[in-house]
Amino acid sequence: MMAVAATVETILVVGGGISGMTAALEAAETGKQVVLVEQRPYLGGRVTQLYKYFPKLCFPTCGLEINQRRTKQNPHLTVLTLAQVTGLTGAVGDYTATIKLAPRYVNERCTACGDCATAVETEFDDEYNYGLSKRKGAYLPYRMAHPARYVLDPAIIGTADAEKAKAACKYDAIDLEMREETLELRCGAVIWATGWQPYDAAKIQPYGYDRFANVITSVEFERLADVNGPTGGKIVRPSDGKEAKKIAFIQCAGSRDRNHLLHCSRICCMASMKQATYVIDAFAEQAEINIYYIDLRSIDRFEDFYTKVRANKNIKFIKSKPSSIVADKDGNPVVHGVDTEGYNRYAEPHDLVVLAVGMEPAVNQNDFPLALKINREGFIEAAPENGGVFAAGCAADALDVNRSAQHATGAALRAIQVINRVARAEV
Amino acid sequence: MGDMSKNYRLNFLKEVEANVEEGEWVKMCMQCGVCSGSCPLGKFWNHPPQEIFMMIRAGKREEVLTSNAMWMCTSCYNCIVRCPRELPITHIMHGLAHYAKRLGLIPQQQPTAKFAQLFWNNLSNKGRVNELKLGVKLYFMNGIGEGFKTSLKMKDIGMGMMKTKRMNPLEIVGGHGLEDIKGFQAMLKKAQELEDQRIATPRP
Image 1 (cartoon, rainbow over the protein chains, first blue to last red):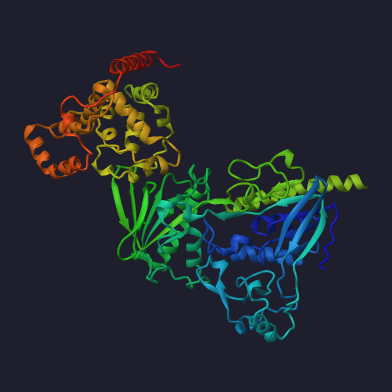
Image 2: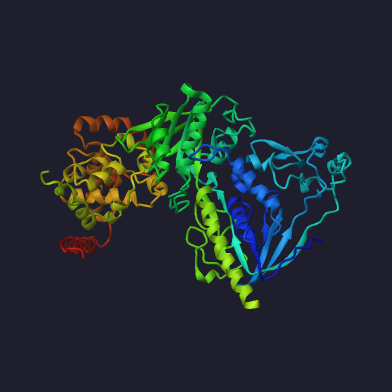
């Protein structure tokens, strides 16, 4: 049984993405006891699945590495992976959380040598690449995963693959007897950082995400561009592996739409412009990019990036929300619509269409373990009624990484204030 | 500078809001254009809905009210279903058509308007649609020559309908109707009075 020391002076952080990691580290580095709970087998969340950041076009691996090092070095921080908060009771200053720990079947003796992965045979859709590639039943979730420890897929437990993995391990790191555990821990304040998920593109019926192989989402495109991604960074289309040189980006795919998400997801304009630079980098003069938009929302310092992208003559901006996509006989997605600057009807074939899908809260508003004030978009409000529970990052609003980190730092301060009050009362 | 403020008075938008059914929605359009692209007949129109809404806000009264756009709507509801702001676009287009008709601004020889009038005359006469008479009137709407040509073209269908008792040739004389036609006509008269009264009363 796993033992985690926690008191009413502990801060519980739910979610180990960039917001949860930031909040946990900021709080732990002031000397507070922090327990960080993450559902995936590793920390970093969706940021680990990004190829580059906007607007600097630098690599998220850099900042993630710094955060991983801070995590390893901090004696006040306990990280629980494959862990889910299933219950939360109490009030500000004294909560009890119920945490379900799923078995990893790999203990801390793992050196990430990879022999188990070589030994096993069954393959599964790789969730890290949104199913664009396969992974083995024994796997390292991604090359920079922290903890740097392999995971066994629960589906291979009880099969020959599990025994093969165990036999292949030179370090006795595979423990097939691991079982799900439940633990309860006390805490004084909770930082809720469960983040976002891409809106289900199949719900946008006229765009045919579920009908056309060459209509993909922005998060999938990000994996395609990544040199460590499923295609080794080659921008090719799913149907036939042909290089995708002519690409349409469709903005507000789900966002700002009363049939889907009410809010503006804020990141998509910049994300598509960033992804347009991937295409330019790959194909230079041969690249042909059409960005279909309602309004471009690249404000403040992002304006410079927009100006730079706009200056590239291979990137066109078309003010129009496309009405539908159909596939021609060669599998090329054809984008239909009428533009707002001239009301011209168009039917433009592309190699690939990328839907800039909106951000929706990862936790459904009916699934929170205790009553919180949730707004109509499903995000957690900053409300006194929430007591000692503070939302951080995309659990609170659609934010980019930069603003998520800022927001998480603010949430950490709120939690620290609660713990300080509790500590004073106890003296 | 001239009198630039005149361009921004939104007089026509206010007129539409006051007189056109669902007209108060026009200002909510964010010009994304999904309605125009979704219209199956869009390429036959002078102005797609998105453009009509912008023209209303730009005060282009004459152009809007004499446009053929709202007469081309077939009520397929594609635009309503897809509008990200849930504007009742189909209803606004019909509202504009009504208003244009009320002001006598229907484009000359507009076939939808002509047929709508034929249909109404036919229905309001006896309270029942006389399909035979309506069909004949429709065929001869644009003159005798075209009428005979269309009738010949449709003759096989007509014969088939008669054989299967889907059309009664005797309908051409008199035809069926309501029992209390006088009462029905009185009701229509009253409804017209109420409508005239409603139009005459300025909205708050």
